Image: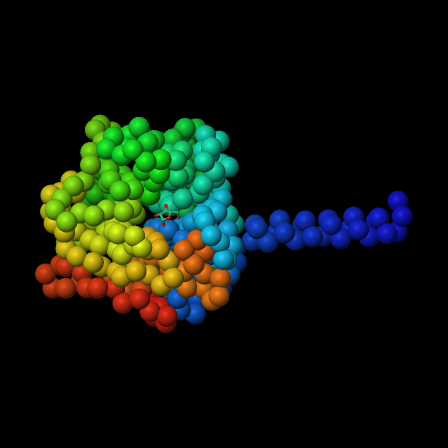
Length: 322
Ligand code: FUB
C-alpha cells in the first residue's frame, strides 16, 4: 500500500473512532438561559424526576432553517440543578421501531414503573409505540414489536396524524393512564405491565375544549390538571378536574404563542419544590423556526385557589435548583 493510501486509511480510522467516542461519551455543559440547548434543535419536551435528577427527553429537529418536520431520533439530557446538563448518547431512533414506516420521530413521554423506564413515542401516521429500558438514559428497545395504539383506536378521528403525542400519568393508587391525540383527545388505562391498554379507550370532551395536541396530565393537592396545545399557531391552555376522567373544567390560557414557532408542546413537572413549565420555541438565532425548535424552561406558579398563573416566557430562564 502506498504512503498516501496508508495515510488516508489512518485518518479515516481516527475520524470514525472519534465520532463513535463522541456519541458514546455523555457531554457536559451549562445552560445560559432560554433556549437551554443551543448546540442542537430540540422539541416536544417530556420530563421525569428521579431522586434529585431531572431527566429531559426531547424530540430532535434535524437542523436549522427547516421548512418541514425532519425528526429521526430522540435525545435525553439530565440535570441536578437545571443549569449544569449532561447530554447522553442518542437513546432511541425511529429505526428502532421496525413497524414505523412513516419514519417520523414525533413527541414522546417517558414513565417509570416497577424499576423500568417506558418511552411512549409517536410516529406521525404509523401509531404510538413503547420502548423499554432498565435505566433512564437507556438504551431503550421496542417493547412490543408493533404499535401500542394506531389510528384505528382514534375512533372519532379521520386524519392520518390523529394518533400522536402520548402522555402518561401514574396516579396515587398506582394506576397508569395514557392520554394522546391530535384534534381529538383520547385516554385509556395501561395494564400493570405498561405495554398493553386496559379496557375501553375514551375521549375527553368538555365545554371550551379546543384541542390541537400535546395533552399532559399532572396532579397537585388532589386536583388533576390537563394542559394541552390549543389553536394554531398553538397556545397552551389548561383545564382542571377532581377525577382523572373528569369532568374537566376549562380554566384558560396558560402560555401564549411561543416565539417563532407554530407549536409550543409543554411538559409540567415539580423538581426540588419548584414547579416548571418546559416547552419549545423557535428561538435560536438565526436558523430557529417552526421546524427547527428549541426547548426552554420557565417557572410555573399556582394561585391560592389552585388555578395556574400565566407563564412568563423568559430569555434568562430559571435560577439554579438547589
Ligand atoms: O414534533 C412533531 C409534532 O409537532 C409533535 O408531535 C407535536 O406535538 C408538535 O410539537
